[in-house]
Length: 352
Image 1 (cartoon, rainbow, N blue to C red):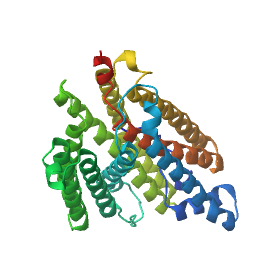
Image 2 (spheres, helix red, strand yellow):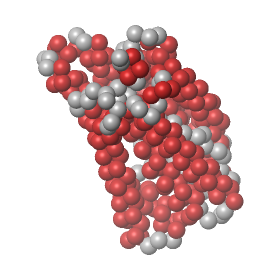
Image 3 (cartoon, helix red, strand yellow):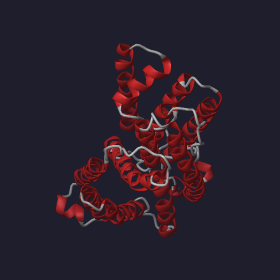
Image 4 (cartoon, rainbow, N blue to C red):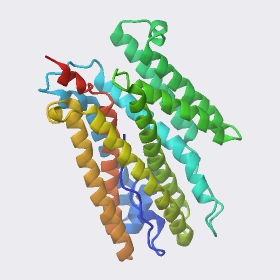
């Protein structure tokens, strides 16, 4: 799943707009660019949309053509509709991260002393509905490639789990729209469990693999979604840098444990699922190597941006590094979705 290094606390005088990672809304990005680099309003108004549009186009191309490119020359069977499935799974992962992040991040905000009494707008309802639509789209795709009706597709193992995921996200959206949004934790837990079971249909220890996926997917969603919510809040608190720094510090302490969980479960899953003799000759192995390379780039950019924030009073350099980090993190999410679509590498090692 998608992951990256935990955030480090920023210097007390550093404005929230210079904090790296996560992608603020388009309008906010434009405003940050003007303040950080001294650009004119006209330039700031088109630079951010252009950057986000280019990143979105690149992510879409990777999702659509990534599975085929990774499997080229491996001798593995072609998976029908792999590109569309990758796009739908990317939306599902993003929706889960956004909703879980909005449930956990407010717990970090409440203890902050002297914080402004303003809160960012919730994206949980729209995110969960988008995730439910993505799960429903996977059911339709499964029915099409299996030459089954929708009702018959529900009776299959994967179809039934996808239906459970879609319904769970709809219930989570209803909870988010109610007066007790924390109730969404229950349906989201069901969604994570169903996704973990769906990802492990193999005959070799599926329970252990599903347990690893539950921890990995939960930690990745909290890390990614929580960071986005924290950064959106820090932008809203840009007039209170002390409170913003305290919030980032609280998140950084949580992120350390999330990063440890991601590293441990990711390593265990790789050792369990990827035979060493097919690391370079399977689509799964190649995709995993690409993800590790992107994560190395993310780590370097994150460390560079945070050191700049601690040293420099001008956030322009750190902000440029953060923008690059944001693009690479988006690619990590897409590559993680590709990793769930490519064939299981054990089939190669078992072939005569």
